[in-house]
Amino acid sequence: MSVLRTKPIKDVQAQADADGSDGKLGLRRRLGAVDLMGFGIGIVIGTGIFTLTGIEAKNHAGPGVVISFAVAGVVALLAALCYAELASSVPTAGSAYTYAYATMGEIVAWIIGWDLLLEFALGSAVVARGWSGYLAELFDLPSAWFAEEGSIVNLGAIAIVLILGVVGIVGIRECARVTNLLVLVKVAICVFIVVAGLFFVKAANLTPFIPTAEPAGSGEDGIRQPVTQALFGLEPSVFGFAGVLTAAAVVFFAYTGFEAVANLGEETKKPRRDLPLGLLGTLLISTVLYIGVSLVLVGMVRYTDIDEGAPIASAFEAVGAGWAAILVSIAAIAGLTSVILVDLVAMGRIGFAIARDGLIPPSIAKVHPRWGTPYRISAIMTIGVALLAGLLPLSALADLVSIGALCAFVLVSVAVPILRRRRPDLERPFKVPFSPVLPIVSALACLYLMLNLSVETWIRFLAWMLLGGIIYFGYGYRRNRLARREQAAESPVERAVV
Image (cartoon, rainbow, N blue to C red; front, side, top):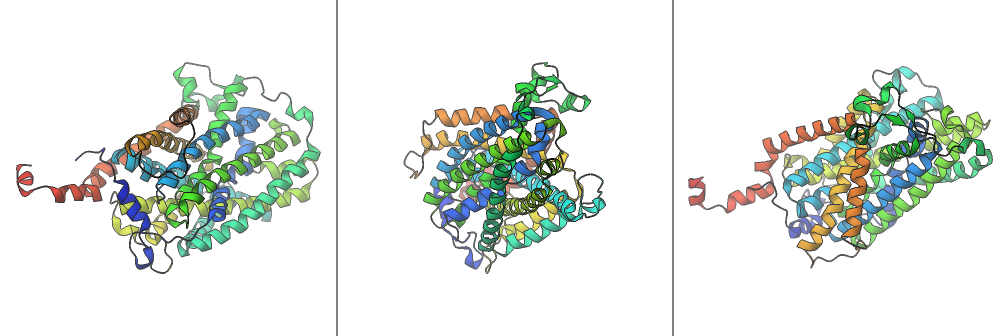
């Protein structure tokens, strides 16, 4: 049996067409284009605006963080084009995992599925801790149980994950309604931030736009320096254009969630039309909002004085607009709530797809007969995320989300020309322009951003991949559906010889 065996496209399409109302391994189609865009914006507009903007401006890029968001947005858009072609051609749960299984082989699919579980689990845990911090600031709650710093067990983060996990399990339509409402609130507040913040922007705060590179502090050397600096023996530094690129690699975390839209292919009424609209609409709207908000932030407050905990709210307080700070905190809570919810939903669908294929026990892929959701795997994932959010600090999680997403985007970009070559007859409602050039550019751009993440992040990522390899060869390699099909097809003589 080969680790590079591929899953037939007809099997993928048959699973996508199955009805999950009686507990079979299929999901119900209940979503439209607006719902998909709501999910996309709901997960993308969150931590990037309300937290990472200030952290990266202060520590790596200065006002140049605006360029960082633009660079990350362009790379994300290239990847989104590749996702749009594959999602419209093979609309299924599992997104990049399933695309890889159909094009590059089982071991690659497992790697990307395991990688995506890491991305969404840590992503929701990171955001849950940010949510807890904003809630503590808004209502003056005890830092010992809600703050990012000083808390041993973050009860706020645990509570919000468990509550939203229940919402996600109860039904996809209920998730869509909650998410769309939260999206309306936070998009309105983001527009308010840009419009109101423009009145407080000072040109002096934007000069120099890209601060001169300077030696990194002790916390930025050794395994904490970017891989590019370590490979070429460069002195660890921050700011300058290298700092802008480092910030771009980190804030890419803010865009990663758009792939959650592709995970909803089996629950979309008209996937061939609506999935590309949901993916590309999400990225375009989110990129414009990110650039606008980050520009206003670094224009209102000198980048050296930005508060990393709640950068936008504290910026309005610094200019004497405390009332606006309250609105921003409310928007942050709404925005981060939708991010956690969509992360949990997407993670459940990825786990469902992997279990359905037998790479992990298929019994946990059961669909609830009433709710139409993969409730067992979703409950398991929710409990795991709650533990991560309650016990691990944000700084130990965020970079891993970026590297996980970038790895997935590299493989998705490569899958586009491979699938075109292997299945030229496959119907493609949306096609990436200038293929294979644009998918190759997308893969290289994502790889370059990966190399701008720290050596420490790479070590943690490779450790996670090693654990995944142990699980695959210990369980999934011989027990998955394709392996059992191959074993059943063997003749008695062949089995005797073996």
